[in-house]
Image 1: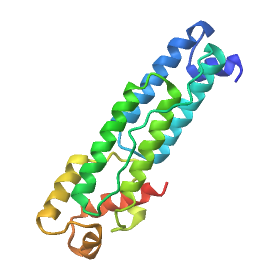
Image 2 (image 1 turned 30 degrees about the vertical axis):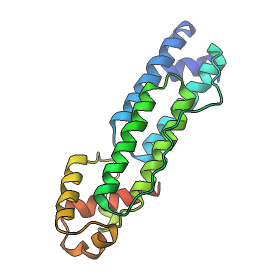
Image 3 (image 1 turned 180 degrees about the horizontal axis):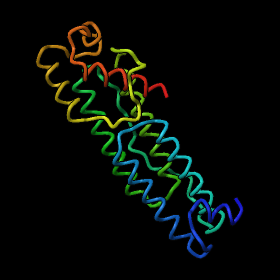
Length: 189
């Protein structure tokens, strides 16, 4: 990137401000990634910004990252029981978000965001399509507490697996049909 492109990307007037601008952009992106619902296309766009920041950091500040990357391991295999999967997903998501926020370097952070996306896709791909996918708004924030409440209600009624959920789709609440379909579609992005 040319110096002018770097200044434009960082929204800066002076090359002397680059280090501060990289730090503030990095923090802003990490905050976004750890406080929003996972929407793969938006997260991939943030990864692209992180990659550009990393390139600028290497080129203009001489910061080179080590080849080692932090990871939480992600040894999860989902059980197929909705409530257990929901809880396991959110526990691992929280651990990954903590590692992302703690990451002082850009490159390991990128690796962790890819790991977070992979975890999300594994979790979301289990959810069946239960309504017309043309009606689903993918960019809407997921109401985690509402979904947990619905899953808990289903669990009490004996509907515990994704297969049972699909079999009972005609009597399910519209919220659950909608969110299940949205998760399934997002897992394929």
